[in-house]
Image (cartoon, rainbow, N blue to C red; front, side, top):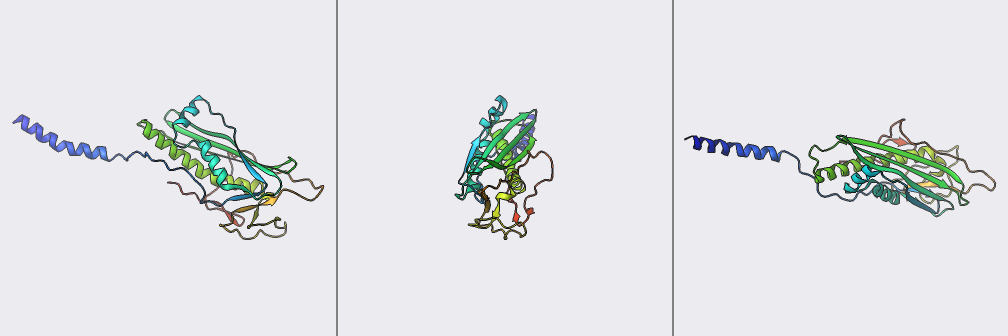
Length: 249
């Protein structure tokens, strides 16, 4: 009789145990390549835009980056190639990745990205730059299996890139306004006394030419790494050009 009761109790408990196990969300195992071609391109009045990766991670960061499905530096490079373009005018621009880290401190995952976009005239004179920094942190998965950690690192990188796309465009508009114009094929920036033409989302952001009047000194503009200050809100308008609104899941 006791044996029969024990079997009956186990039979009732089994479905409850299965239900508890099934309530845990499935682990993401497919990681689509992060791309940003859906955002407007930023067209600079330069012959070319060079992309450099100057970040050398430490041992701990290198271990976490190796585990991540998408290395932050690689995603930043891809974003720069997709969004920053030159229109063939004299001059050059350099997009430099200064930091693209992933790390774990205790039970917290941390990530930081710092980039710089600098602009030079055709004779090599630096005329401006813009810096952008974003950071994110989140709790590491309690079950530190490789699959769960990879999924957490992918999500962290994706969120940082959403922040970076907004912050970078904001800082370019703030620190390099002389080199930005609005509208396809614009050869000159709008006069200081006039407002720029309305932004066309299909035309991207077209930049101010770097070659000034003969003998005129190019203005030096720039920005510092953004650690504090007004937050860039997705969808916020600066002048007539809206900031991107990356979709983050």
